[in-house]
Image (cartoon, rainbow, N blue to C red; front, top):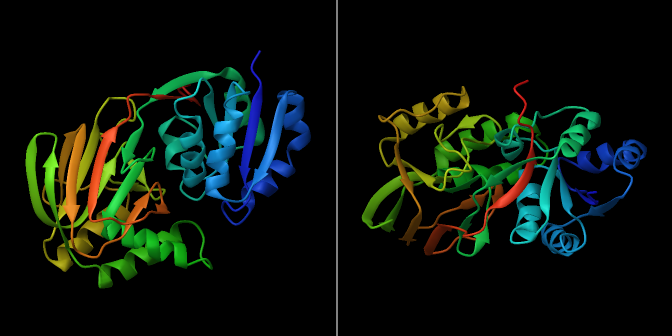
Length: 296
């Protein structure tokens, strides 16, 4: 019989995750009688507690958004435990990628966990840091930085207004290095490293990306005119993917490159530390997560 630890990010989505679980505690204990619930307030603590819980629990459940899922995945990765997810974030991109339906009742998520349908996903690593869905550098990272400053906004409005601000302030950056064995040297508006198809809740950044196919995609938006960048942003905002006119997509397993220009970066929607040198590769170990494999 499985035993469970549920890690709740108290800061996720303006404390909605904490409220959601506290209102459901009696049902959780009824469905998962051997579950221990822990309320946590920082990403580092989430990762530390996930690693500790993975030693004694067979299932470690993350409750929050994509950043919460990333933090818990970092702790569970390379353990014998599997990861479950109750998505209560703004975008919930990783949850959608494993078949979970966002904004459902707690009964639905508990039933998915009890069904225990496992999906083995690839784990990308950038400069030693695990991410699970996408990393964005340039315009993408700047948009995410602005979104983190707009605490008075919620949901897609936050990302839309952040993207508009980034449109007027972003500057192209030069990125040079190698992608697998090929040389790469371009000035770009953004580069997105994709393990999943969607980021920011609705932006179809890399429609062919699958998190279990053994490769990553690098989506390159070259430094064409700002007007054309605006057209690309509009297409993404309406749920469209970018054609070859607007972007290049490169499938790869390992990349190393340098950036000397000032830039911003996000990892799964969380602001990341920028560097002048990046190394990106897939971990040798996959992560087992509980998803919803039903057709409905």
